Image (cartoon, rainbow, N blue to C red; front, side):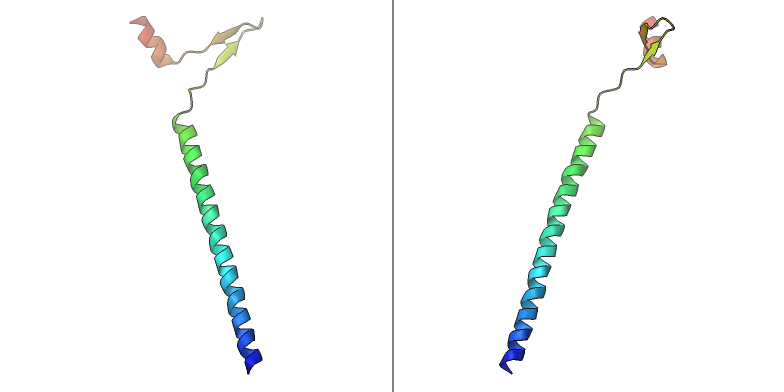
Length: 75
């Protein structure tokens, strides 16, 4: 009878320990996901606008200006 009780206690401890380990791993994973999501949102919101250049046949670069900003320059 004593062996059966010890066996049940050891099984209970095994499942309890693994449950705690899995919960800790899930919390760590959730924390990492939140940090990476915040980083992606930050980089999306605060990223600078890219500069575009066109090259001519002789290799000179000309900065391309959007149509809206070029119309603002004329007025």
